Amino acid sequence: MPPRVLILTASVGEGHDLPARTLSEQLLEECPDVELVVEDCIPAMGRAVAAVSESMPGFFFFRFSWLWDLGFWVFAATGVTRRSTQRLLTRFATPGILRLVDSVRPDVVVSVYPTATEVLGRLRSAGRLDVPVVAAITDLAAMHYWATPGADLHLVTHPESIDEVYAVAGRDSVVHCVHGLTVRAFLESRSVADARVALGLPNAGAVVLVSGGGWGVGDVQGAVEEALTLPSVAQVVCLCGRNEDLRERVERRFAGEPRVRVEGFTEQMPDWLAAADALVHATGGLTVLEALMRGCPAISYGWGRGHVRVNNEAFRRFELAQVAETRAELRGALVAALTAGRTRTDSFENLPSAASLVLEIASAA
Image 1 (cartoon, rainbow, N blue to C red):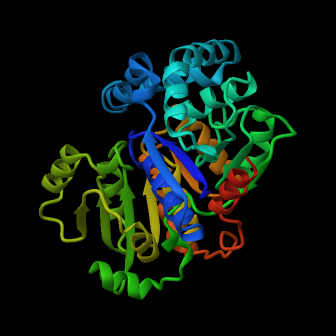
Image 2 (image 1 turned 120 degrees about the vertical axis):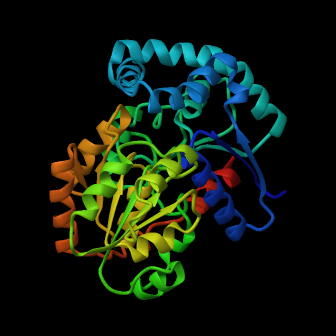
Image 3 (image 1 turned 180 degrees about the vertical axis):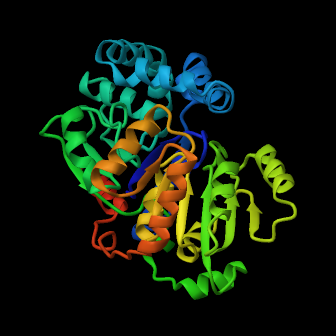
C-alpha cells in the first residue's frame, strides 16, 4: 500500500501554507504514488481556537501591534501562563483534530503550524493518538509550540535551532535539519544577471528588496525611503504581499520616483533574492532563510513584535542577519550589507530532504 501522509497547515499568511506546498511537491517527487492530504487545521480546532489563530493576528498586526507582544508573553514566553494556555488549547482543539485524523487515517501526520503541533504532541504523549507526528519547524527561534515532547520527529530549517528544540522537547528527541520546506528553486544556481533580466531590473547599480511578508506589515514605506537615500541604489523593489491597501499607499507615495517598483504577492522569490543586493524584511521567518540560501544579505526591520522579537535576537546571536530597530540603524545596516556583498553558501544543498524522513517514518508506522 502507498504511504498516506496528512499535512496540517493554516491559512494565516504564507509562513505555513508555503512549507505545506513545497513538502507536498517533494513527497510526490520522491514517492509518486504517495497519498497526500493537505488540510487547513484551523476549522477543525474549533471556533475558539479559530478566533484567536485566524481572526486576531490581522487585527493586532495592523492596529494594536503592542498587543501581539502581550499575547506572546502570555501564550509562549512565561512558563506558568504558557502551560495553562497549552492545556486549554488542547482541551478545545482535541475533538476536531482527532476527528480529522480519524477521517484521513494517515500513516503519519506532519504539522507545519505550531498550534496544531502542540495539540498533536500532547495527544501523542497521552496515548490518545496512535499515528506518528512530525513537527516541521520553519522559525529560527521561539520553539515553544513549534517543538513538543510528543513529536516522533522534529524537522528544522536552521541547524542553529536544534539546541532550543532539545531544550523544549527533551534531549531524547529526534531532530534533523532538512531542505524541502522552501521552494526547490532556492537550491538551484541562478546568476544575478539572469535573474535581473528575467525580472526587468537594471543591470548596473544596487537593488534593494523591501518586504512586509504575506501580510504586508511593518514600516515598509520607511524602509523604501531609507534605501532611496543611498546613491548606489538603482532600484528599490517593494513587495506588499496580499495587502492591497499597502500597495496603493506605496504607489501613491512614490508615484514620481523611477527608482521604486511596487509589487504585490509574488511566487518569484527565488529570482528576486538572486537579483537583489540586500533584503529588508519585516517578519523574519522563511524569507530570511531564503535570503540566506541565495547569499543575499538580510536585515530584519519594521515589525519586531512577539515571536519576531525573539527571532531577531537569534539572528543577531548567530550572525545570520542584521537587525535594525530604527531608521537610522536601518541606513547603517543597508550600507554595511551593500559593502559586504553576497555570501553564497552550499551548506543547504548537503542536507537531507524533509520528504525522505517523512516517508521513512511513514513506512515504519
